[in-house]
Amino acid sequence: MAKAIVLFLAAGLAEIGGGCLVWLWLREFRSLRVGVLGGMIPVLYGIVPHRAKLPQLWSRVHRLRRSVLFIGDDPGITCG
Image (tube, rainbow, N blue to C red; front, side, top):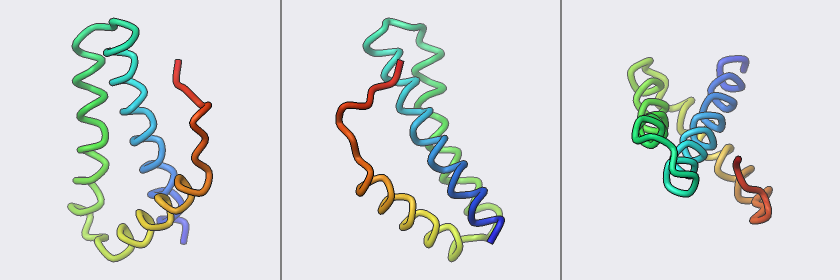
């Protein structure tokens, strides 16, 4: 259970953080490094659980996280 909670939080942080970095790069004219890092973070959070041999747990966590994001979606929230 603790592993699932950690994965849930890490996945959410990676998705939101990566998206925020790309947003800052595109809209706030930050350096290209910020945009590249923002693009790589979501890719890494998809690779790590697969390499850790947790595909069944990961798929459950991913479905739960997407459900929470869908239900709690607020278009008024922006990064930066």
